[in-house]
Image (cartoon, rainbow, N blue to C red):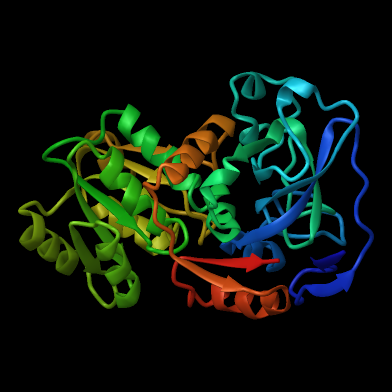
Length: 353
């Protein structure tokens, strides 16, 4: 099979032919039909995760995976309902199935777990072995394109979980100003979830790129504000002109850039909630007094679990989610990783096999 493999840090992926993997008794062999290209893949190549994970080379990136069932392991129970040819998406965070987090269903944050795309097998290859309990079937009768399914396993999933946290914390609702920071692969989905689950909140999208702001407006944002070259005072004034309020009640940050987080905290209203799902930077510095005295709540939110993804799949099958995609071929992987590195992809780049 073809695979784009990483042999060392800071080098382009090597496009090569490798053996089709064997599967364990509890696994299915998935024929990859599309794989989303995430900024995390760029960070993987650039060494961002070196201090957080001990990775072995060569590895195959790609954690946003859609495909079809090619082979079923001998121990996969019949009642799991899988058949050859089923259309599936892959739940990315595979837990150890024994810890408290796994028992709660949050396998993506299991400290002993693993992820496809950070080991020998990932979506940047034509086949990948997957434990049966980390696959979700998609209704083949709906004829949903593979390139529309792969990105929802992270780009569509991650902001969904974050916005659920904001909703459940009581941060959303009428008269609230709800900001979406960063209109990239995650942000284009976050704008839609903000309108679906915001409870009538006014949704404002923030980004540096006007094309991305135009996309956010098309996807339902009530207002858009450019951060490029603008001070916090400039942005506050623009926010007040647009909404009548110069502060934010809730933020879903899909970028994670330190300068944007500092700006966001400067704009928060008392008892506001800030949820980070983006990872452009690696550390932040925030003033403690307003965090305490104005009773801000900061939420970390990572990826999503099986149930979160099942809910996103249901929304897609119901036609409630729109996709902003750039489809690429296997041979264009390194070219598109570079575009991701410079922020020049609108929405999600997807490899289509």
